[in-house]
Each structure stands twice: as structure tokens, then as C-alpha cells.
Image 1 (cartoon, rainbow, N blue to C red):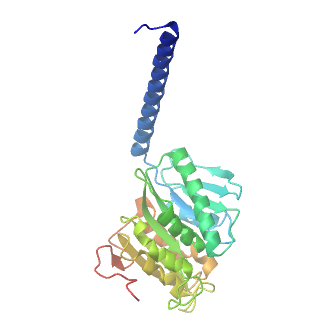
Image 2: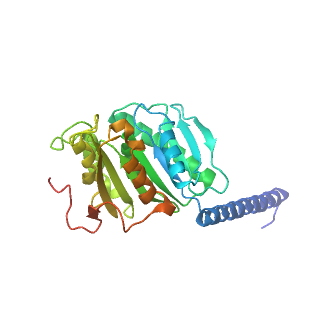
Image 3: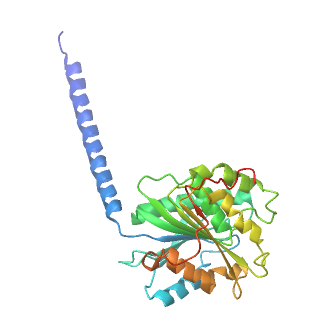
Length: 296
């Protein structure tokens, strides 16, 4: 078969195209391997926090200030706000050499209600993806106050699917897993949380902290609603622990500044302060034969 000039030109262009694609593929592969290596070697383990409904990114300022005063480690405080149009803004910075900074993610849409919690979880996922790409951490811890704990729960069940990043521990503080309803009347949200709980990371340690002014509620959230978190997490994660604090600053909005809560954060969330042999009773082991939801 005679090869014409036209055929020769096509062959040359094909060879050039293959060379370009091969080069791009090799470059992408090298960059990807390099990025994975950076992430695997990272020593950063941030504490990512979500405030409750009507709260802003300033919600945890007092808590961070008190913790820095208590452990003298000067944890950085980075505030991330996600707007309804998708824009994300940053305030503060992560100090060089700080391997355990606090990062707060808040939302323009910070309203109550299950439909908004689902929207906030989607917004949090977008912010989380930016944070992991900016800071290349391979593990993190979570804290959610009030509805922030519900946003975290929805995020873990519907969005969090990471091979290279682990959430090591989660603390929810005054989170109303059944809103204001009694446990005998489960809300749509609680039913959904239970339905999708198999999507939760099975190596996760969860601490659910409840406040109690009168052993019934914390002034806003019924104690039974916070304790309903056991139907979501118990038996689905590695460890699930329930803790109830009472007395001064046990009111719902004051819980993040409560001395006992700060002590729990220091001992069970912050890396260098953990003491697994001295702390709240473990309510559940993952391998328990009892399914807490099983018709109860």
C-alpha cells in the first residue's frame, strides 16, 4: 500500500498527540504520587469544629482561648465561612509548626431544621475538600456543638468517603439527635441517621456530651434527645461514650465553655493530652452483640 503525504502527515500528528498525552499522564502521575507522599508524611491533625444553628464562626473563640490558656500550646484558630452561593472565605491562619490547629467551619445558612442541616452538610463537605487540599493532613478530629453535631453526622454518613484521610475522634456537644421530640416519637432525621449509620467510619471514637440543668434538659435541648445519639452511633463505630455534665455552665449555649467539657476535649480530642486509661465510662464497644436500635 502506497503511503501518501496526507497519510504521512496524519501519522506524524498521531505520534505527536500520543507523546503529548503520555507526557501529561506521566506528569499527572508524578504530581499525584508526590501529593500522596506529602499527605502520608504530614504531622498535622487539625480539630475541625462546626457551630450550631444561628451561631457564627466566632462561636468557639472563648473555648479556644481557654484551652490555649490551659495547655499553653497556642493552637491556631482558622475560621472558614461558606456562603449560599458557594463562596468560601478564610479568617485567621494556621501558624507554621502548629500540628493541631483549630478550624471552625460556619455557614451563611445557619438556620435550624433538618432540610437546612442537609444543606449545611453539603456546604461543609465543600469546605472540607478545600481544607484537605490546602493543608494535606491525613487525619483530623471533629467537634460539633448543638446542630453542628447533626451536620457532622449527616456529613459522615453521606459525604465522607476517604482512603487517605481518617477522622479519629468526634465529640458532639448538646446535639439534639431527635430535636425536641421524645424518643418514643422519632423524627425523620433520627430515622434517617439510623438508616444510614452503616456508612459511618467503623474505626471512629465518638463522645456525646449532654448538659443538664435539671436532669431533663440543658435549657433548650431535652436530655433524651442528646442521648438518642446512641441509636445512631452505638454498635456502628469503634467506641461510643455518653457523658452528662451538670452544674454551672451546663446550659446549652454555655457548654463549649464548661470546665468539664474543656477537660474532656483536652483529654480525649487533643492529641498530646489523651489519657485513655482515665476517663468517662465507655458505653459501647463496636463488637457488642446488642443492636441498640433493634426495635427499641
